[in-house]
Structure formats: C-alpha cells, structure tokens
Image (cartoon, rainbow, N blue to C red; front, side):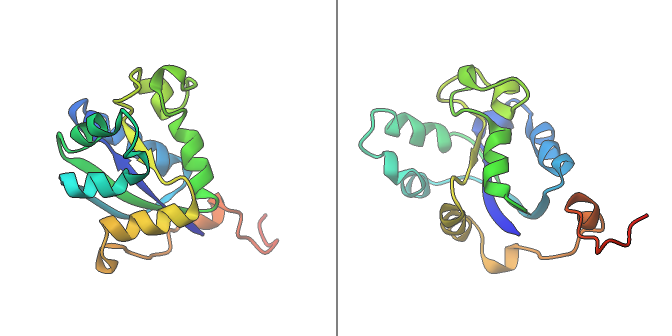
Length: 156
C-alpha cells in the first residue's frame, strides 16, 4: 500500500467543499490515516512550493496558500498517488475534465482547491513536513478485502 499527502486548499475551505471532496476519496475506498486543519505559514508554503520559486506565479501562490486554514490529510491505498491525481483532475480548473474534483468545482488557474503528491518520493517528503509520526494511524479497515480483492479464492 502506498501513501499520499492531500491538501484541501483555502478555497475548498472557504467554499465549504471539504466534505464533498473528502467523501470522494472515502467512496473510492482509500483509507484516511491522518487528517488535521492547519494554517500554513509563509515559510512552510515557500518550502512546499520551492520548485516554483523562479516562476511568476510563486508569490501569488504563497499568498493564496497562507490566506486561510487548510485541511491536510494522508491517504493510504493501492496506487494511490496516481489514482488521487486522476481524481483531482488537471491543475487548472477550466482544463479539468468533468467528474474530477477540479473539473466539477474549479474554474480558476490559481484557486484549484486541492494539492496531491505527484510521486511516492514527494509523498514521503511532504507527509514528513506536515505530520509527526504520532499523528498517523495504521489500522485495518473492515472493507479493504472487498476493495482490493484480498481473497484467497474462498469467496462465494
């Protein structure tokens, strides 16, 4: 099983879309192993988006990211990085396909509701930046064997 970091950005909070977005991941069958509301500091935003520092959208991105609280969560599941990114849709809401989170709820190229790790390596780094070990909870969901067909051939 793989883990990924998801951030529900300030516009998701301000527009009261948190429940709708979280429920999509739960309904898909992913396990939430960490979830909290935080205010991202300017320092943390700059570190998180450091790869974009030289781009013209960097300063507005930092301002947007720090403008209101966010929800950060760690999801666990098979191929979760790839699947979560497909569920999120294209970065710019106006380019995202209907049925994706951004395709259904976003139109802006800056206010795009959600961040998801783009690789397993990025997920590890990002999870460590936002969560302490004691804030992540490993448990066995009752429905995992039905979601991932973990049967040994003994099903009806």
